[in-house]
Length: 180
Image (cartoon, rainbow, N blue to C red; front, side):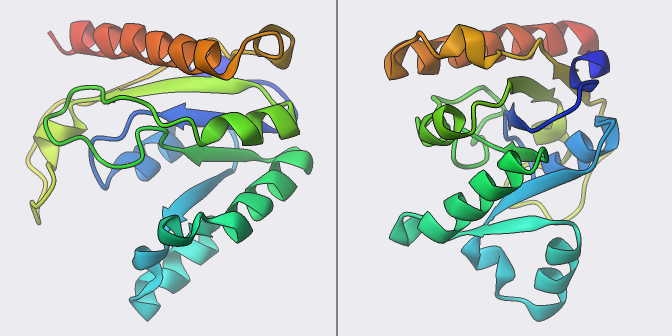
């Protein structure tokens, strides 16, 4: 589904989150430069902080609401950039799709950009939480059709959250089928 990323203008890429490899995996399949949301704790190590800043990471302080990071995200979206975020809020504990958090919705409504669902399947088996070294396992990254502003602007927040959860569930199932 890489062709779903072939458009101009800003976009929010909403991906499932299985492993620390996920930003790299999505970056590899994207046809464009991406900005990434990264939790503040990832910036503690100076060398790693330098690397992720060079890769256009946006620092989010989840403990304090992340207002400055959200403002930076909105600014980049308004400048026609693509931002990758993980609406589950954290990595999967078992490789399955978790419940989405609604934090992406206010930014989507203010930026009016397309919302591109992406499901990563197999990365959990390759490098689960707590592992230091990856194992060789197949991974699929499935990109779905963007949900455009013209469609989601008439949805309530609950409907939008449910619609994105359903789209990601379908893509996750498709990713599992690809690995069979």
